[in-house]
Length: 119
View 1 (cartoon, rainbow, N blue to C red):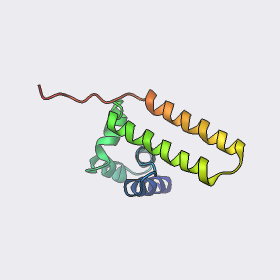
View 2: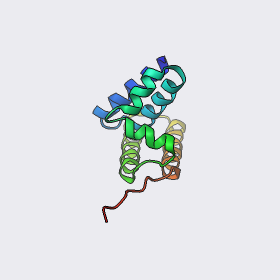
View 3: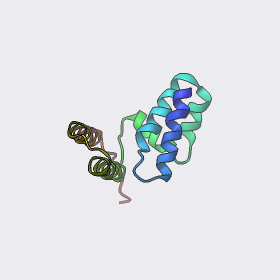
View 4: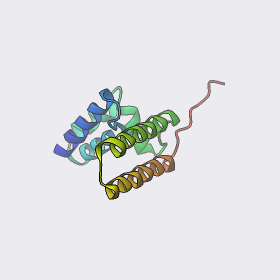
């Protein structure tokens, strides 16, 4: 349950601060709560903001194209800032670039939720 609250806190911070991830910490929090607390698992599933994300993930329908675009943009911005201004070691820079590419590839690999048209 502690890991659920920790990752939930990170996800909430991510909803407020640009560049901090939101989606995966929320998914992780839901996973941890599903294993430790029926009460908090139900709360996550019924939450106005987080509920649809968690339900879609569990149903295997993926993320919206918009959510994927936001995530990839945040990764590009934060990793670029880190690599260019915060890290001086070439090996660490290369590792961060490879990590960013891996995370981006994973996001692109995940299913994209189909938006139903009104017609």
